[in-house]
Image 1 (cartoon, helix red, strand yellow):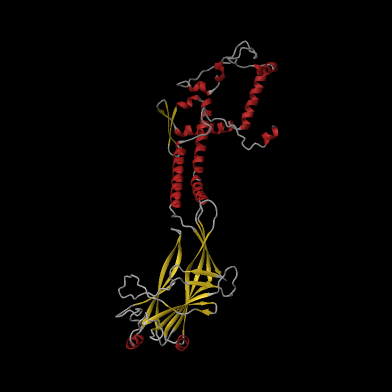
Image 2 (cartoon, one colour):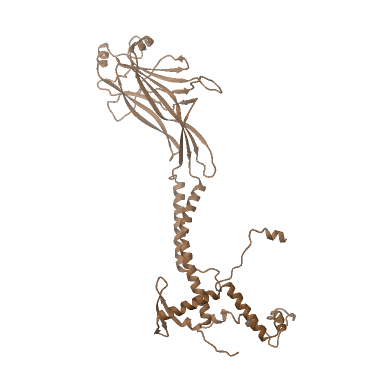
Length: 462
């Protein structure tokens, strides 16, 4: 049993009460400060919880550039849309066509048959906006090594060829403009508008949002161009669990790069048999980005609140110092008044800093400086009096005095003295010729003095 007591982690220390009811000294200043500190801490806690629950605290985002060997992406929205500003006629109109756009895929070393893209109408605020050329279901694959392991596909690119409408090559569903109009069209300075779709991760909605960027490209049938769009992918790793670390991965097209170079019209004509304004090549870039999005967890919020509360509670050190000084003054005053009871009849007025400003006794004003000097001297003596060494010393002096007044056997017999327990019928306690009463239990205690309205001084002769 003794060994179990030694390892007890919940041992308690007995603290004596300062007075009848209080183990700690508490003041009005401490109460006001405590109320303000706890109110501020609680308000800040509620504020942080509100921001956290409403998603107004931004997550921690870490970006790390990387390089991919294999990637595959299917566009839910078209990566590239083409339009023009129409004047009299729409150059993409199928019934009076000037520019025909073909789309073909480059899978490894194989090239698919060109597919004519049917223009579509999109409602825009610009009344001069032409029809839009929108490739659908575009899938791009990055695989420069050509290895096909674990379901990997061959490298796949997409090509958009802007051709001058040719009556001999296009289908019956398209009617080219007259030769006169086509010649006039290619003589005029022309430009197209490219609408490129990229995506970003919205930390508020936790969804991937699309952004359309606009680029202007000049076209000239006598100086065809070759522009390559390399789309960069971002692998998004999301941790949004409020307690533990989790991982939810997604990918999206976050940016792109373009390179443009001149292209020989003769090469295009030899390859396809018609004239072209230029070609757009769509592919995935090997450069990418790994993004880690970590939303704040409940533990982080509580830790943040705890740090702020600790900072606020550091102010309590000042209040503790004030209470310590006030407690010492109160105890020293009680000790001095135990030896000099009349001091309680003095009316003392102090300022906010504890300095004595007025001293009165029986409505008579006294010299405050003389009172201060005498009281400070008694405080210093009382401070030394309550030290532990002095307490032991005074008790030892009392023992020697008692031993000089009574014989040693009487002192030994005092260990058997006591007040008779009211419910004990047996005589187990020895009594002297003067029997002790229950009232003697507090005969020398402050309880006897606290019951009196006024302090009276009695002179007794021993």
